[in-house]
Every structure is written in structure tokens, then in C-alpha cells.
Length: 544
Image (cartoon, rainbow, N blue to C red):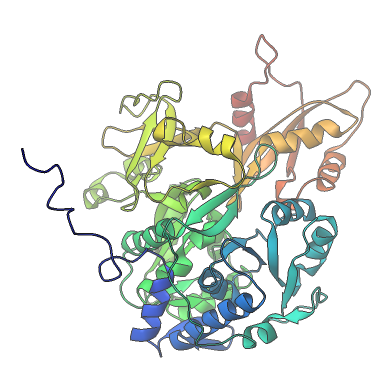
């Protein structure tokens, strides 16, 4: 009998010559080595090359290390799409810390919860958000070192909250700071919070390996050639900008920063900087298409536009194509690093009648190259549903671009990974050709302007109003935002609350984007057991 030890493992071990942990940090180092003078970042009149981008990221890592920030410490940022946000995506993990990007639309209570839950040690905040951050810090238990960012291109007058200015802090660091890849590619790189659709938001932890793979998969999915020009309409706080802050370094592309989403600046940047790619929610398409004639620009090149949320109507797709944009539909969740599913268009579908093309475009699609498996299963038995385009099941994911889990929440993590799959909570069907299509959301999530809104959260606020007897909230289609919350309300006998009264009441408890935009007073349709029939209300909302 021979030895049980395989000759393919005997003496063939990992060592520094043949193995390195995967991390997207290596992308920037390479881009700076190979294309040091290539423009990496455009912000207003500022232009930063890759040599400087890399140096500044290392300075940030050095300055953080001097503060005592190290392995698994959390650095939170409240920033719009500005250069420091890009620097943080490299500098924070170079210091072995974890980057926590916060949604700039959150209210103070949620921000405070996140700062405490993440045990934030350093907070980098834009002066534009000084008021809400000041309020949040007054609520939070943690006392992070606060660093204020003053935008030199677009000055903000919010008050200084800390003793350190970002630029001064950065200059205290060493540009040649020696950093290293993570000890383990499974180490945490970022923390992103869900929208808190049931209770407090959950902290989704990404690892270096997943970020490395998804960043490269973006390049492949987007067919990015060398030196693309990417316009930042998608907020970088959204799943770390769907990992595109790291993707652009793979191909030494140019980040075109955009502090605010406004039609004229977008059109001007797309035309003048020859933007090749951008991502965003359907509202970005509406903003571009509905711009005035004095704001729009003629394009002499095609722009690839990647959108998530609800698939755009055929009329919008046609208008975008006429305007010079090629639209591709993506799907994903915070737990899978953003987009992990793409509606991979097949050339033979171009020959189909427009109606059939629209049906194809309405599907979410197939797995990213970095995702190992995507399927639709019976949530109870975990058996595959028939691939008939009709049988409902839960969309499930498996692979290297699925999160590590939920921070400090083992019960939710175990539930999410039950049976060896990540359970998305989205209900869908599998078509015979292997493309999936969402049909409903098990938690009645409303997606407005790319932001998730829980109908349950809004209903709980409505029930606090003394005149409300019963309430149900569903999505109402909206040309600008994709969807907005629509509330159906039964008032208590003798009550005279108006639509304006209830909307104002909700604003006291909810972030503005979560507040219902429409209130309908009616007797709510119910089943024999008293359960409100939301499917009937959705149909009513569509007809409004």
C-alpha cells in the first residue's frame, strides 16, 4: 500500500513566493506603478493622478495609524462622492481598519445607532452634514475622533465639529507609509448597514477576498477597456459604490466625482470628460432625460449605464438609447457586495419584436462571473422550483461575493445562511433559459431612488397617530423615484385628519425619503381572518 499523502500536496505548501491574500488594495498600488501620471480623480477643477492618489491614500493610513487605529478598528465616514471617499476606500484598510460608509440621507437616531454598534473610533464627516452629525453625536455613546472635511471645490458652511481638518490630518501622515496586505483575505474590509427594514439595521461585513473578486467582476460585466471614465452618480456609500472605487484601479480608469446629482453638471461632465460608464437608480435616468434643452448636451460617444431596482419601462430605454446611453439591468443586495446578477443581453434577442424584448429586459438575469451559484428555491424545503417562469420561490445566492455575515448578530447570520445558501428574502421565478425574475419582495420593501424603505416601518409610525385606526403602506410607481410610499388609511370614527396632517406627522419620525408621498383614505380590503390584502392595494396604487 502506498502513502495516503498526495504527491500534489507533499512539500508543495503556501509560501510568500506563491501565495498572497487577495485584496483590492493591490489594484491601486499597481495602477500607481504602471500609470503614475494617468488622471485618477476629477473633482471640480482638481485633477489627481494615480501617483498622488496612492500617496494620499498611504498618508491617510499613516495618519490613522498615528492615532492608534489598527486591526478591526472602525473608521466611519459621512461623505458624498468626493475624493476623500475614494481615499478612504484604500487608506482605511491599509491601516488594517474597517471602513464604515454611512448613508448621507439618514436621520440622527439611525446614525447614532450605527456609530455605537460599529464602535466607531474615528469619524470623517463632510461639513455639509454637520447639523445631523452633531445631533447624532449627542445621542451616541461612543466618542470618536472627529475629522471635518472642507471641500475646496464646493465649500460648505456647516460648523466644524472636531479639532482636526481632513487636509491637515492627511498631511500629518507619511506618503511612503509601509502598508501590507491583510494577514488573511477573509479579514473584514468594510461595514455596510442595511436599511433597517425590520427593527434596527444590520451591519453587513465584507472581506478583502470578496471585494477583490467583485471589483474585477464589475470590470468584466461592464466590458471596461483600459482607462475608462466613470461618473459617480451612484452614492459611494451604497455597498461601497458597488465596489467600483476598487474596480477603476484595475484598469487605471478615471473617477469623475459628483457632489450633487444635478442635470446640467451631469450632462456637462459626460460630454466634456468623455464619460464611458456610470451606475445609478432609475431616478438618474429620469434626471438626465427630463433635463431642459438648455441643460442637455449632444454626445459623440456611447455611454454604458448600469441600473438596479425596478427594470426601466421600454419607453425609458428607448429614450436613453436615443440620448446615447446603453442601459444594462443589474440586481443584488447589500449582502452580496451590491450587484451580483446581470441581465446579460444576447445578440439574438435584438431580432425579437419590441414587446418580447421588453419582457426579456424586465428579468434580473444570471449570476456575475464572481458568484458561484444563483437559484430560486422553495424557502421551506430548499428544493429548486420548476424553471417554468411561473412557480414562485426565494432567490438564493452562494459564493465568494456573499458577506461574512451580520456584525454582532449570530442569530440573523445563521438564519440568512440556513441550508448553505444566502436567503435574499426576494421572491422570484426561474425561466427555462436560467434567467431569474423578481416577482415580489417578501418584506414589502419599497425602493425609492435606490433606497430601501420598509412598509412596516412607515406603518408603525402611522399607527402612532391618534386618528389612525388602520394603515397599510405599499409602493406606488413614480416616474422620478421609481417607487414612493403610498399609505392607505382608515381613520377612527369622527376623525378628520387630512393627507397633509399625516404626512407632516410622519416627517417627525422618519427620514424624508421614507415619508409617504400619497395618503388614500378608505376601508382597507381584508381577508376573512382580518389580514390586509396588500396585493389589492398595490393595484390601486398603480391606478392613482
